[in-house]
Image (tube, rainbow, N blue to C red; front, side, top):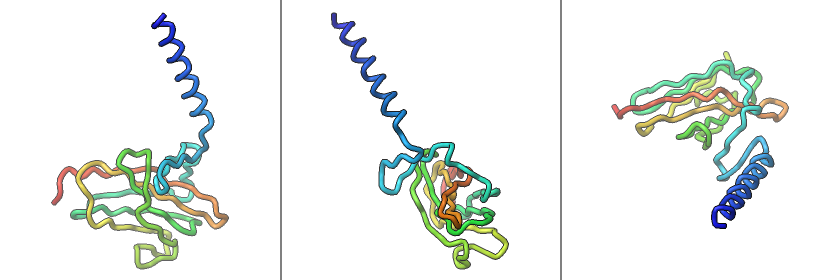
Length: 142
């Protein structure tokens, strides 16, 4: 009797879980600034190049972008849930932009461990696309 009850309970939980997952949109928001984006929303056409490397105690991100109005630099500790670091216009010179479509962003201080980064780009028509996700591992501080 107890086993039958447990079987039914497990079945009900599994069905509820599947139903909940099938109703998710492409963007799920758990925290107001934290977003997980499904793979169908990731487009890399307008950000064909994106890399990052350690720079002293921080990280420097570099990318090339075409036809993008503004950028949001995002970071994550797990590669799935991202928080914004900074928003900048594609015309911003003081934060690393230039006239050749090449951009850079410096993060002065990064804690040891693996951090994931991506660029959220807003196109002139208001649509949004994402760069590939990269990771930078800091073993220890310099």
